[in-house]
Image 1 (cartoon, rainbow, N blue to C red):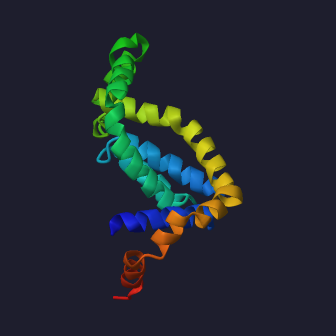
Image 2: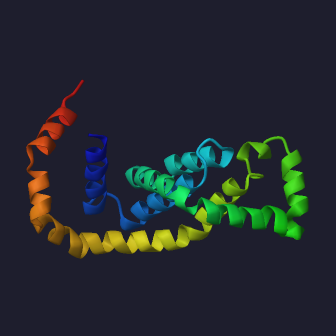
Image 3: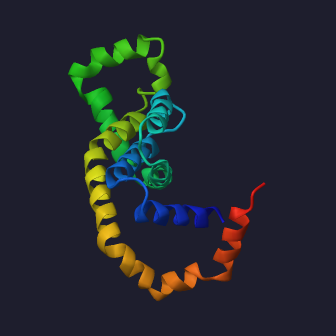
Length: 174
């Protein structure tokens, strides 16, 4: 039932509500959070940013979930990127030493190659994710939404007894 809620939220987000810019920004910030470990200082600060700014929270949660699932596939690339930044880039060594001795910086776990690579990789991918998601939301709202709602599969699923039962249970007030 959890997955039905996520799918329902995705279609609600894509159909209407906030602007494409807000949806894309939420998706981008959520993907950055998903590529880096959750229980780090930068992960917690990133969620504060998501909650503080006017971005779409459903898109951020969806992107976090998807990016967390996909991040394991990218771990070798994140490791290589983090290793390059932490070990092979000589001019940055004094910065890493200073950060390691700073009181709060070790809470970021920056000295882990996968953590460093995931965060930097997420930041590097952010402009691409933002632009692609913004274009996708605009295209969905202008062209794709009406076409998808005409598909027989969509109509069958949306009218199925399981979906109707789930909507009744969801709408109950406790």
